[in-house]
Image (cartoon, rainbow, N blue to C red; front, side, top):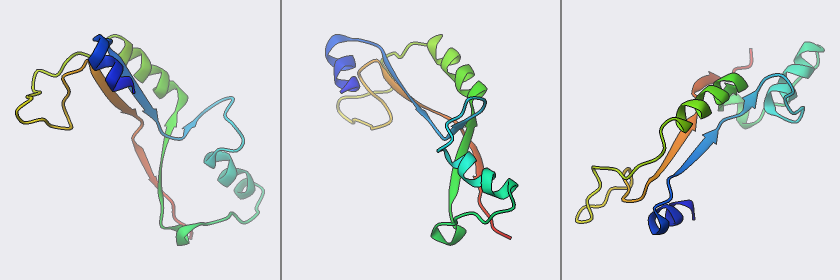
Length: 110
């Protein structure tokens, strides 16, 4: 829907995707707390998918920095977009999506 508004009205639109944000004032139902609270109490933790999973964790300060950087660069039309050979990585609309996060932590149970 945002891409369509960008295309139809020329409205610069930027989407941000965050990955498991943690930090002060974090929600107690988030993965970080679900795993660390019982572990610190010496209690067992629930392990799903036989421990074969990955999850990105992003500290709140990194989210704020990413948002500040994105605000300084409004979305623009991609100069690489060609109507004769459209590419999903480019767009004729002033539209962008950014993933904010990237520290990859692997879960392991010893």
